[in-house]
Image 1 (cartoon, rainbow, N blue to C red):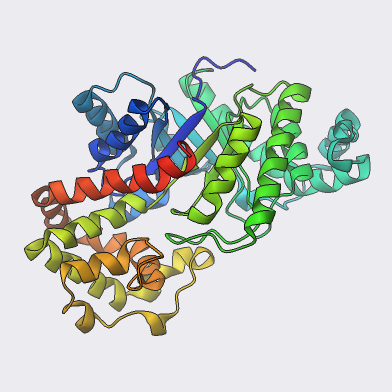
Image 2: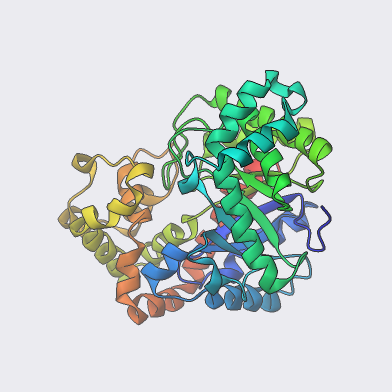
Length: 410
């Protein structure tokens, strides 16, 4: 399955809710390049985020192109239509060149029985890897085949409009309740090959919780075993089914899964594999930290964002209920936050677990609270511009020091 457009070995999915931090984000990739490691920037934004903010997919392309031109970036970069499906893909087709096909909702739906029979007849025990048998293959296919067929339909919709080889395809199954085991992943990859999808990244659901904005919750040693086994499943699928040679795992981190970064780095070193790491809402939170550290009107606006998020927490949290764990008793009252200094606000929000003031409950609430800033409209965006130095410094430092260094330069 040849690809004209090939994703590099190391790539970083950079979320930017308001499309204002492209240059600050790209600066982090430039810092990696100066140290001899190419990390391909991929600006990503989901349909849900566009709807909440009131933006269009073209805004992501415009911000990426502007940042690349401003900083003189001559290496590859991409714009990801994040978590799209058949109902949402069309508005992304023109401005995007990377498509994350989210088919998690289709997992468990029964495929046509004849299609299931044909799949098992064709693949048998998938070569016996991971102790697979025809019966186990059938069980896995019964759970995942329909979802992969849905991915095929989305892929062909894009291909019919853009043409083959003009975009990068990721298949995402991470937003579901149960993780995929490595043997199930191999079956999924066989089905992806059958559908003719030249997937370059695959985003499985890993064991443990990947809550928004805070660290991984789970058994890190088990994650590391799964991650290495998934790499082995990918290599088997590439050899056996002719999937793209650069196919790699995509980790939809929900931002800042620092405790598993060493495991990912070790796996890449020992196997030579690449990885696509998505950092989601990290940039939005760094904007708030930058506003707070700027003091004055910036700090006042950051306090106001928290007060509004606190007042509307139920509404803001509802769409993210499965990926946040907030103890409301540990959320400070807005009156308390209004008395905070710039350092108080930054220390509570910045993801530094060694800092006694860090509050993961506040961080999760603000992570999903970008709708508050969106409603502020120009007032919020104008304040970003007014506090650009402080905001950009935090955005760049966060991406480079907390993500790129720990995963790609470790």
